[in-house]
Length: 378
Image (cartoon, rainbow, N blue to C red; front, side):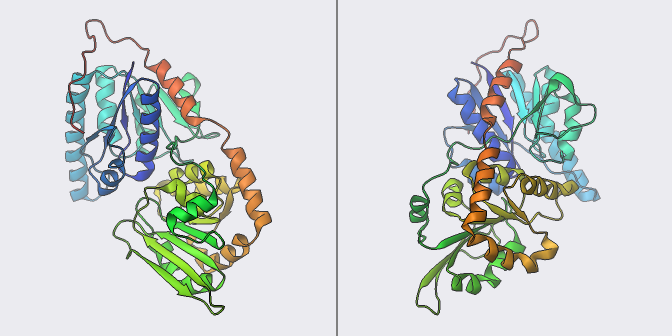
C-alpha cells in the first residue's frame, strides 16, 4: 500500500478530479488524503464523501492589491507550516496537485522533505500555479497536445482529467424521472461552473417563456448565492405545462447531464470532462475573465473535436437562436454525441493511477522509514 496526498481544493473543478482519483487509489488498496480549501464550495461537495479523509488547509489566491497580497502571504505561510507538520507525521509516498492556491504549501513542503510530486493541469492554457510549481515537480500531467517550455521528456504524461465514477450516462427516462422532468419534452441544462454564472442565470430568466413555448424544459444550476431556487410550471398556449427548475447546486451531475438534450455551460476543464463522460452536447459560453483566457482555449478545442458549439459572451444575443437550431435537430445532436463518445475512449484514471504507483516506488531517504499515520480527523 502507498500513501498519497491530493491537493485539490479551491473550486469544484479542482476538487472533483481529486475525489475521483482518491476513490480510484483506494480501490487499488492505497491510502489517500485530500487537501482542500476552507471555501463553502469545497465543504458542500466533500460532505457527499464521508469515507474520504479530508484536511482543510489555509490558502489564498495571489493578488496584486497590498491588502490581498498580505493575506496571500499569510495564508500560504500557514498552509506551508501545516503541510510540513502533516508530511513529517504521515510520510506519504507521493503528493499530487491539481492547481489552485491549495497546492503551493504542500508542494514546497514535499520538495523540502524529498517526497515525489506530481502536478495535473486540465486546462489547455496551464495556470500560474502549475507553471510555477512545475519547476519542482517529478511528474506533470498535461492535456493532449499541450506543452510547457522546458518541461519535456520522462516527467510529462499527456492525459485527460479524472472524472468521478458516479458521473456516468443513465437512460434518459430514468434521469428525467429523478429530476421531476417530462422525458417527452426537450431538456436544456445551464451550468455556470462551481461559482455560478450571473449572465447565464439572467439569460435563462429572460428566455424562459420562449423556451417553454417551444416545449423546452429548463434546469438551471445558478451557483451558491447567485439566484433564487424553485420550480415553476409554465402553461403555454397549446395547453401544455413546461417545467423550469432553478437550483443553487447539483451533487448529481451524472443524472443532470443524462437528462439533458443540450447544455449551456461555461468552459472549465472539469465541466468539459463531465460532458465528454456523459456524451452530452453543449453550447459553451467561456468566462471572458478567466486567467490567461483559458476557458476560451478549452472551448475552442471542444468545438474543434466536434462536441458542440461556442458562443462568446459578447454574442449572447445569438444564443437563443443557436439553442433553438440545435436542440430540435436530432441529426446534429447525434453527430455531437458520436464525437463525444470518440473523445471519451481513454481511461484517464487508470493511466494516472498506474503512473502514480510507479512514482511512489521511490524509496524513502535512509533512516526515515515511514511510520503508521496518526489518526486524522476528517
